[in-house]
Image (cartoon, rainbow, N blue to C red; front, side, top):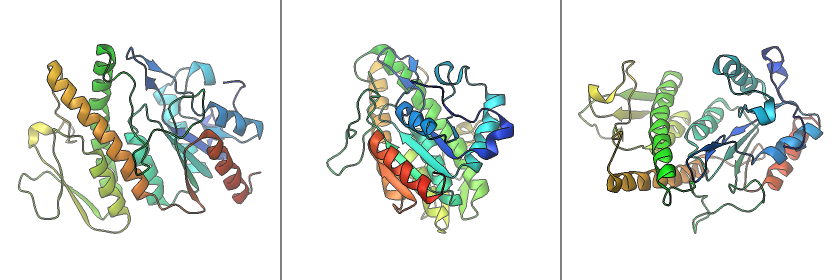
Length: 299
């Protein structure tokens, strides 16, 4: 970061937010330590230079002068997201991106656009096209997941956390979308979207939400019985807490596969238009922001 950003930091000014600059936040290094993701620094500098008020949910002492405080910052984030005229969501190859993908789906559902989806390359010091499949879908490439024990264990904890958070988010969507029905029935019906407790099912849940938001009647069946739900009734991911090394490797392979499939699902879900852009470099994100800021008459 090279300057003090013009960010929304007070609830009384959240309604003035012009851009929501969010998505990928902390990333794990090879030692399994969480580090601040700096991929949007250049973009946020550009916004500040143009006197654009934005909200960055990655609250950190380096950028905001303080650590994230949920009771203080979560209400500001909700208000800023609601008020923003343009959304910029970063999907990093170094973090799973589950909640980000559901936030993108939520904005699609609420027609809260314009939106820019920025698939970054994972390196704040360069500006390259991210690693991708032969068909062009960006890849999930968590650092150290195959090389260091500390990173493997840290990524496994993230795997469990992300799987459970996505299930809770799914329940929130079920309360908001009338065409989305959640069941907990061991008898699987034809047409059910089956979400088992031993797999993450991130892309399956995202596709279900996208179909329901488009008006299709969708049934999501969380199997596993009462022991696969928490004390509030939310479905849970029942991966073992301390798996042996061989099983850990298999589970982490599943995690990477799920991350790759989720990125493909995001690409398939988004209808690219004048108001929704998908970009792959910082420079292209800045160009898209400039165009959309002009469309919204903010510059």
